[in-house]
Length: 160
Image 1 (tube, rainbow, N blue to C red):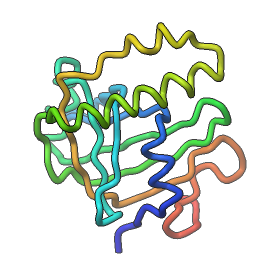
Image 2 (image 1 turned 180 degrees about the vertical axis):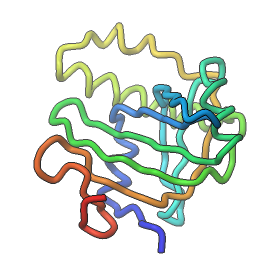
Image 3 (image 1 turned 60 degrees about the vertical axis):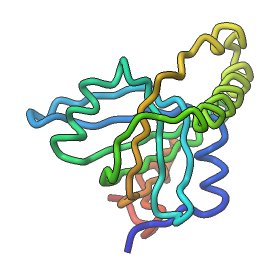
Image 4 (image 1 turned 60 degrees about the horizontal axis):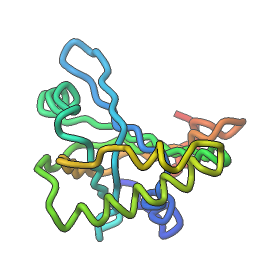
């Protein structure tokens, strides 16, 4: 059974936390890109992340090759960090309607980084579009917050 996002984890995912989206190519070379928005899907077992299309070539090629994705979510004010790993279900262009979700994400991200000393004006320069939406089924969910619990599976409670 796949892990499901709880309401608290959905709030965290959609709150403007730092998003890093990663994959790998056939030669096992990693590719990582800043995400520019995320949402939980209604089933609670899937999520969609958004990346800037122009920057995502290598990441998307790796996803097309093997279908694997990892997303790290980190809150700058306290370093709370989660990692979602899964299998990609869909890759498509972001829509005009999803731009509003990305604007809300950016507003939250601006405030997160402002709390740790970054200028709002600088963070607001983050480019959001045109974007690619990557929907994936969550297969693994980990607490990666620095400390003794880092690496603990939130689905099983055990370290990997």
